[in-house]
Image 1: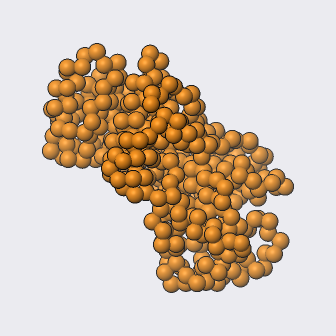
Image 2: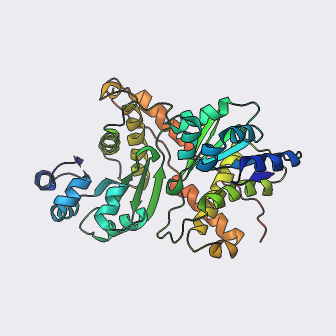
Image 3: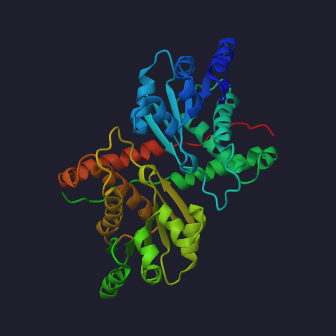
Length: 197
Length: 197
């Protein structure tokens, strides 16, 4: 499992080429590379399974104003290329778009945010790390959704203190507790009532 | 069930005073009244069960930068006053905060948004309308969450065409289908794996 964190796309592609055995490769990037190295970035995106960007960058990359249309545009570039698009939405959470599905997850609710620096990177690292930790399990929609929940939980710890202070002393139990809480704060059950008309 | 849509807060309070039999009263407002009629608005908020604002307005009203802290601030004004705070988040959906709970729901994913005008009003109308339509059912957390899902589904139709064109020919079945879809796009199931450390 390979995560190409945000850096110059030529470098990402060179690393990707060395990791021929990766069963899942994800890539993060940023507005700078879309502006000054777009061709190389698009070429690099074609070599991974999953693209992680914030939603403004997805719009910038594709020229599509809507998140869903922007994600579908990148999906239309494949194959080859990513079948999974993750749109980071900062304090609003993240969304995942595949050719057959859409998933949206809010950020973990916090009373106080001390330092949002690195939240997106922590999310992406947690997301990819969960997939790696899941081992031989099939990388299907259900696993990817859970991976997003773990990334979201991890990011929430990251912003509670400066730098990596909080994450450095994090335990597996604390992460799991926030994932369970995320499940509660997003759950509703539909029980249709009689709607006239 | 009473919905005081956004208008000058003295007028809202006068209407509220006439509806002594309302078993649930909700109020929407806007940045203008926070700026030029704050005292009257705060006084009016104290007369309702539910405050609906967008999250920027909640921050403006309370001076708290975080959504959760802002909502808790308004909750601390009661009793009397609202026990339910709804934060509208535009394309990112909406959150509901009560003294004991937090709930977050994304917007319904759409390929194309034609006209976002009135989305927040449609959401609020759908939310309050669902509560009214549920009749004698207890207004508990579960009902409120479902009401948010119906408001969210309604708002998604509203933005697909200009004005009220789309909503005017909407059927109950179409609304229910989007609520069911919302349940699918927000659902994940936690199945913890062995996390080292």
